[in-house]
Length: 183
Image 1 (tube, one colour):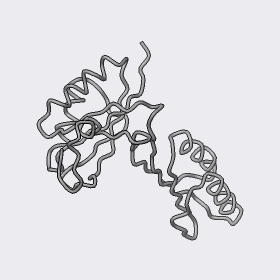
Image 2 (tube, one colour; image 1 turned 90 degrees about the vertical axis):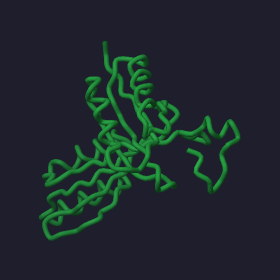
Image 3 (tube, one colour; image 1 turned 180 degrees about the horizontal axis):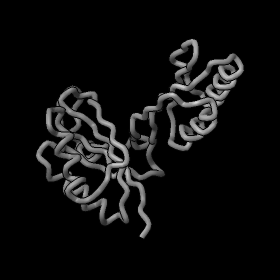
């Protein structure tokens, strides 16, 4: 059976050891995390983890989601529908640019992709690209002929489009109060 990429959004307590608990769950179940991004939310006591995992079907991802929900520090888990979510990744690429022709060509490619030149050195340029994986791979393919010196990816972050949020159930019940911790 062909594996499909799934994106999970998970709200957790922002404390030591939580990421380890979450990643161990995937490891114990035999899944490799394809992409992982973690950061605090608007509430400093809560972090959001965006996890991308390859699975053979919805049943496997549902099982993983249910297992995640059982972990004590987990507040909420949501499977993000790829057609109804915004997915982005930040890629920093340091590329060799030791001639003016190479430098000009790299700058033109960066402009086409709406990327930013964030560092200029005598023999290199560093580019920041934000976008979907197809965009970041396309720019990488175009500039690799110059010689990529270093490359780093953040991992995918994702949000649902429109008014939908990870804590939609809370909002539906009318318990959402501004300024109060409802998680």
